[in-house]
Length: 274
Image (tube, rainbow, N blue to C red; front, top):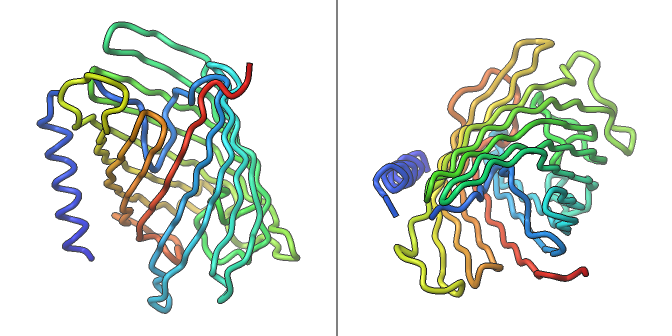
């Protein structure tokens, strides 16, 4: 697996650095500052397949999402969480995610955009690690800022957020000796590889991406840093398939399953609302 990750990461980095072919502001493990099209709805199904370091079993997390492009500035997601962590596949909670784009500077073949993000989540699973993650593991809330620069076919994005965990539902209280506040940060870059030249919106698009994801717990100074590499396929400008791999680079906190794959599908319905 280590050899496979290194080869995949190298291929993605070479493609990003050498292709000179108009880019797309889309990422796999993070959100860009841009939103989905206004007055549209979307369905997204995320499948996390992670290796549990305690017993070498496979943790499977399913995260379905219903997405709504309210207008060109505001986007809302309703998310559900389910997994097999407790030996049987079961629902664990859900979340409301909101992103508001408050700044845009658009030019031909380039733009710079900034957005504010927020998430509030409820989860009934046991609290089993130091890492705080309201997208599937912890009850709590998150708020932050995203800045994204598009330069022709290259997109670069940075995210920073504050996240706080609370007691999980079902009597799963947050451990008093653990840090419940976190600073999250991410740096992402991606490039449109195909098509070389646009002729119509029906062409398949291929994007490749490399992302760095980190978290710092200021209460006890624990931290981690992950690297990801991914490919993204877009068909008819509305059906999307993401395939990505995440690998831990540095860590001094308890994390039960930091390494594994994300496979996600998404379908958009344009102009659904008047």
